[in-house]
Length: 218
Image (cartoon, rainbow, N blue to C red):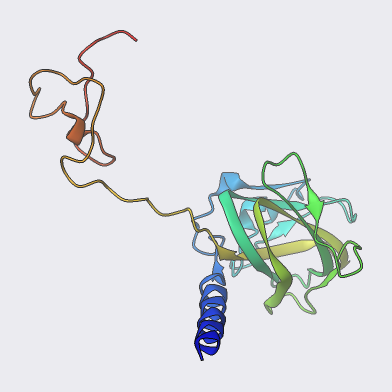
């Protein structure tokens, strides 16, 4: 009986974790900034800049590689490491340009990269879009931990053009908490308050005050 309760609780925990870790990570919302989106190259067209590689971008906007080559890539920097469970892709609306298959590589530091692989250890090729409007969902066999993710177009219609979103969760994205007043200590502090400030308990983020050391040297 105890074993059954533990087993059910474990399953529920896994289900909850899976549900929580299937959220968009910021391409649609703009939480991922333009400077966090880079590419191997871009077409001269202003609608093709990598900053337009966001799912549901309007008009003709999308990332368009300069060359029709499988060596092109689109890279997203999530800012901090995330548990990534999948990706969403679209083509370039109104232009009938879309990626039909792609590979994914990922990294935690932008220096050491590895590709997602299939059960046989081969670089996995994901089936992507069949038109330029529809959203294609691709979930990974297992979530990966990464800060950087690259899309590598393999096959495309007319031109390698992409709009994307990344699915997962960032467990360390929230503040760890603002300490209650009086819970912060320091080696020294100014012996009297300057403008009702300078005490250790004033040294928390978003305070309109601040902690001041008693000494001006290390």
